[in-house]
Length: 224
Image 1 (cartoon, rainbow, N blue to C red):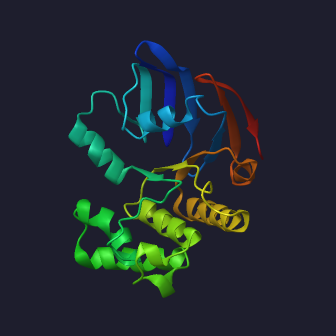
Image 2 (image 1 turned 90 degrees about the vertical axis):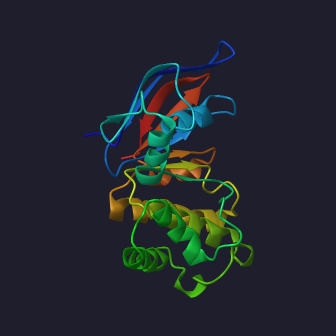
């Protein structure tokens, strides 16, 4: 079963096509980079896959489940349980500590206190922040905040992570460390990952690079 299947997706805004029949797929644990100029439709595609926006035509399936026909509550559950997003600007809750930011998605999902505590402990260890568990976001570096965001994205054990310019707000050395972390957590947890990026460095952790322009995927390059 594919972790992600996108088939002939079309999206228009005010009759102007933004996505023009996009198709792609990801296997469990597979990572792909999505590259292209600004305005090519990358963010719109991510929004459709994440259930934030709805395509006008075509089919999106995550873990075999079609997004078509899901109401807003079901799409919200999908974003909590099956799909997670890592953003360029982290989007951590400023009044919560590192541990609390990671725990919060599990609270929304009704995970019990003991299991939450165990998962938080394991995730903090995994992203190398055990010494910062009680820190607030404003006390962290950019790289540390992105590590928290990655741990939070893994909290509910998703099938798919959508990463939107995950190294775009980081210096090159920190960005390389974050790429290594994304690769490691994807391999360990078997999570598929679609990474939107302008950075050629991101492609080194991805099996495929998809080139997007004017709402279409023009081709792909295999990295392995």
